[in-house]
Image 1 (tube, rainbow, N blue to C red):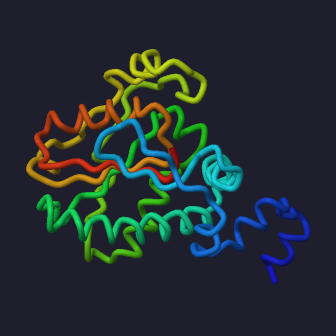
Image 2 (cartoon, rainbow, N blue to C red; image 1 turned 180 degrees about the vertical axis):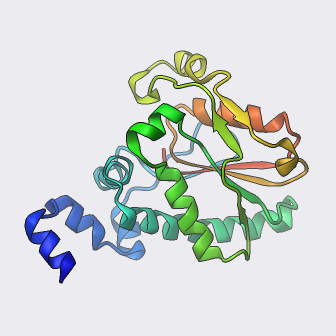
Amino acid sequence: MWKIFLGLLFPIHSDQDFLNKLTAEKFLSLAKPACPPLTPNTLSLFNYKDKIVKKAIWSLKFKNNQAIAKLFAEVIYDNLVEELSNLKLTANFDRPLLIVIPLSRQRYKDRGYNQVDLIAQAIAKLDRGIFLDYKKNVLKKIKNTQAQSGIKNKENRLKNVRGCFKITDPKIIQNQNIILLDDVTTTGATLTEAVSTLKTAQPKKILCVTFAH
């Protein structure tokens, strides 16, 4: 009754209502698959220019839509299970740590949450420790960089994020397989910098996973 009352006072936009009713299967049937990403060892699922993909990402990123976080987690996890099964056999990629791209302290304060962290938490609930181990706060963003979406040139994007990450405890990831999770990659500059930072702690292998490209 309380949810109905709130719905009458603050009606959900039609786009939000549509997105919230989507199942993983329905989303897969509507969304356009991604083109191959520019960053090596990266798995990206959907085309960011696709209207439904972009609307879903914005709903999570700027409206704190928890239902979308769960939807993304389901879709990513289904693909991850298949990918991890193959990598376990071919590349000894077993029991990886799931790590997310962090927000700067200022960006987190402004937004109130990290949308990628919400996806990771939902993935961890689905997995229940079977294939991966979610580790929070392994990477820290120590610079409040300009939003990458406002920078068109790849070289300038790389400069913008250079030196912006720090590992909180290198021992956590030493000799470990890593899944590095982000919501969107465009030129791959953020992932490239994060991977470079993680490699200073000598992990085994790193697989980057993004929802869209």
